[in-house]
Length: 205
Image (cartoon, rainbow, N blue to C red; front, side, top):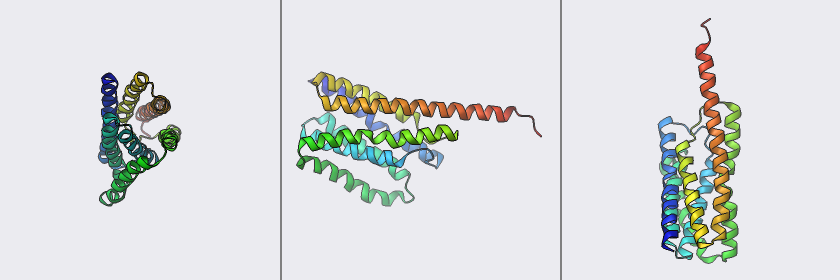
């Protein structure tokens, strides 16, 4: 049991951190081009719901890590809003509402919601396909994606140890999507670098 909780804490820590490099990249570039705000809002909802599930299941690793993760996801959402300060007035109540709602819903409904919210990365997947076609530098943070992949691996071990099918299904789905998104963004960066090299190699007219 304690090994599972350690894996959960590691997965939670990595998941918590993934929003920080993404928010920082948006602040640094002063643009959220190529980043799907829909994905980050859905991830905020997913982590808030997992937080509520953690309290329900009496799992400190799930509850605390997803509480912090919800706030780091909110950092990304706020960074992409025109009025960043005002965004927190609806982001914080949204986190609290999702966490509390889980306490009153049947576990079957919560499980379905958590599985559906695993598709939070789907809008970013479609966005990354568009990014690859456009061949422009995006604000998508590869560091954030790497942290997310590491988090899912740790949670998969947690699910295996505790034989938690819900954790295994949701982490597996999220892992596959993040790997595909990472591949698309790496391909986009290579296209951009190749185009820049070709432009620089052209003789001046």
